[in-house]
Image (cartoon, rainbow, N blue to C red; front, side):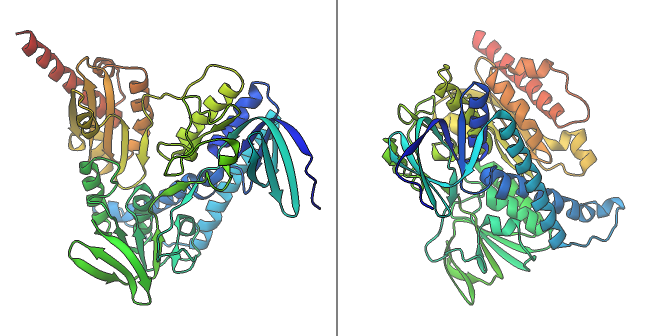
Length: 467
């Protein structure tokens, strides 16, 4: 059945049911709007269905499997077996539980959820296709949260068999003996750690000079050390160009070579889905990278808002959630802007990484005068109890002593990202952190110690300036 051209009215339309989309829908419903959310797959988006959640669950499983190896010198010896089918069942069950919870929350809030693929046809009108049905809706406001998709490489098209993407790797039906990951960003690093601990021989190809190239070089070097301890091969300043029966052809600083591999994983990044929804027909503008141009309220036109991976900035679920709430409030007539002091970045590798706020390199590029102090985890009681002392935590402050950046590399440091973000957002000073009692023994204690030392350094600098 095909529905005619008559358009049904919609108060507030949300396109995309990922973290940004469902957060926007819930916020708008709480503010009294009648909300229709359209999602062409499952609510939860990439993050919950095939990204953040299943990847972190797989990493947790891999860490548990690897623990006896790490603790063998302490007298812990046990045999571990892997049932990849049960692991896959567990991941699917976890995803189903969380998507069901989201669907229930939307239903309780009065949000209408419908399946379909959306394309704009006019500034205030969309066509929605599902199966054999085509419907038209005219909206008062729309929030577009269609996310992003994996970037494809010429000559290395994903076929789901020999060349796969991150989703295929998360829900694999068997463990490959060898795996080459093309891309050493956070997705590649996390998958490399997980698969290496599961027993696969992994090689990472990265075109830049260090892993995690959007982070500082010393962080990339620390992560490289961690991967090499796991037996991961790493080819830096190298590019994958083609694949044949012999393996993956790679061009590096010393010429070309071939890496034989059972499986090739493409993990080089993502691109915005602005083209799939035809957002240009709404009057919205996109830049040369495909990102939708928005103002601080996430407004792309008078009626249309864009959030999440569709807009400039890190492609992170927590960014999309915050933007979704801002867009919903703005659409409801409230004064709301997206202007965070920081957006925390976290890598759940081995070691884990956090980078929150200003780094030393970014401060230097911007001409900012900052001071910093690092505490190596070799002096952390908590690190010693875990048997992993390779890492550090660093605080960066301006000349007033206000905390502007916190970075850390080491076990479990992801759990410090929230405190780091709170300190920066509230303009806390190093004195505030130094005088806050942190429990012993924790990694947060090292944050306090770094603040104490930096407070002393700043006081000395101030005294010298006075003298």
